Amino acid sequence: MPKISDLLNNKEHGKHPFAETLEGLSAHLGFLSQLGCVGLDCSEKSLEIIKNWGRSSTKKTDILSDIYNNFIKCRQCSLSGDRKNIVYGDGDHMARLLIVGGVPEPDDIRTGKPYSGAAGELLNKIIFAMNLTRKEIYITHAVKCCLPDKMQPNLKNIAVCRYYLMREIKMIKPDIVCALGDIAAKSLLETSVPLSRLRGRFHDYQGIRVMPTYSPEYLIEYPDAKRMVWEDIKLVMGELGKG
Image 1 (cartoon, rainbow, N blue to C red):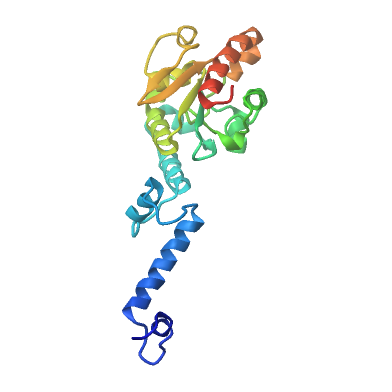
Image 2 (spheres, rainbow, N blue to C red):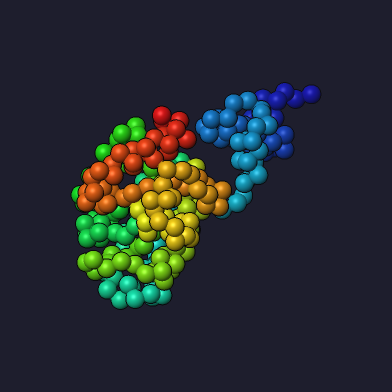
């Protein structure tokens, strides 16, 4: 009876079917090892890997790019007429915490990233106080177009952009969403209840916990509200295990 090594190295007769099986098994074990799986286990991770063999893998970055590429073509409300640039969501595409602001500011339009100006500096301080960095969370806006000075988005503006916001949230799949300001809260929760009555407690958005609170833009104008925002942020930190 030939030895296994002879079967594996039989150049004259080609590879034995058993040798091909061993090579396939070896390659699979190596693949699982690189992904952090140990041994011949039946864990959910291993079963999910096997389940997805042969399926096309589309990265979240590609899907999010598709969302924004479609948005560039959007002409469903009046804001699209003056649009020169759009502000992409920024951060970790697998973040546990997703922050939604209201409307991009001119600084955001110039950089293409949310919260790039003075409000962004204040938001960075809040994120740092949470023992997080911007790279560990995902930040976006409820309304994607920059508005003219002192103009507020109407319900149609919010509703049109909500479609793109919903797709972002579905893609990121965060544990918690922090809605900064009245516009973000209205978009996510589809409510006309004032932010002052929404903040301080979690709400539900399709099974995701939502904490509405005042925006950095509001805090710049009304700094006394910082204490209330910090109370809301501590609740978020508690849910994330950062408290």
